[in-house]
Image (cartoon, rainbow, N blue to C red):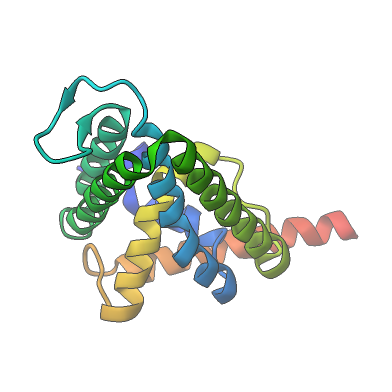
Length: 191
């Protein structure tokens, strides 16, 4: 049985790829998407705690719930790459929790603002100058899937990883069709 909606990895990856096709924009996203996740978890570290783990700074709070939701979603998309993405999410949570405990709210807030500002500015530049295509209007999908897709792109380009045989070929065809359609629509607007 095929997956649908948020769990249709091929369709969602193709959608993401159509908006992230320029090599410089991809490079920018590779280094700026995960810091958005990390600084979000750092901010959520300061939400009320339901339970404190014996390790300094680790708390069962919104940061933990946020991280757990991402972990479960990524593993559901693809067990292998999703497990690696989940591990990175957990490492971000641990790092953000320890950092937040050490810095306190005031200094952590400055780290969050700086990290978020730089990451969003870089992505705007990547789309506006290099991609020459605005990011998709599905902002929530981008936030949820961005970190995983950056990792999946890196795994594919470095190791040739595919969640299943033929994944990359099928996704590439969908991306090319979407970009061709987008260019044709833009050409009609100019004419």
